[in-house]
Image (tube, helix red, strand yellow):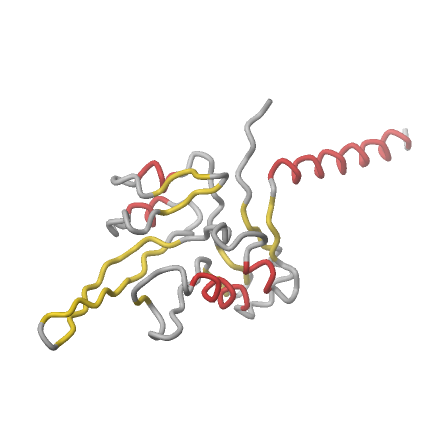
Length: 184
């Protein structure tokens, strides 16, 4: 039996209107996850784990494909990126912000964002900035369907299950051959 392939979120660029609902939903679903401050305001940090690309010929979000032999995990010098429960996960507390994962990701799905930790020294606060890798985590900690998929008003996003996708394509191909053979 073949091993299961990791699921991932995929976009139909023909349906995507570039409204950024996916980014907002992603940021909102992760905002309470981390202690400390990050990009955005103190009250509402904005940390989407997908990135909307708006170019002349294409509008669609780019996000992690959860590669089975993930270049980001293979390149991480501190093993902060691992395969876990059918997805590639980043242990943000172990991440040293070296940027290697960002450079090797073939789809550009990894970004490094600042995390600010306020440490009190006397009466003033000092801001200490640490870069931490971020990418799509399929909303595993929130359970169920990823927030971006739920939020898309045009249903341009879906969770791709590679085994199911292949089976569907095989059935369509077989039906196409059936029609072709009946014409002979």
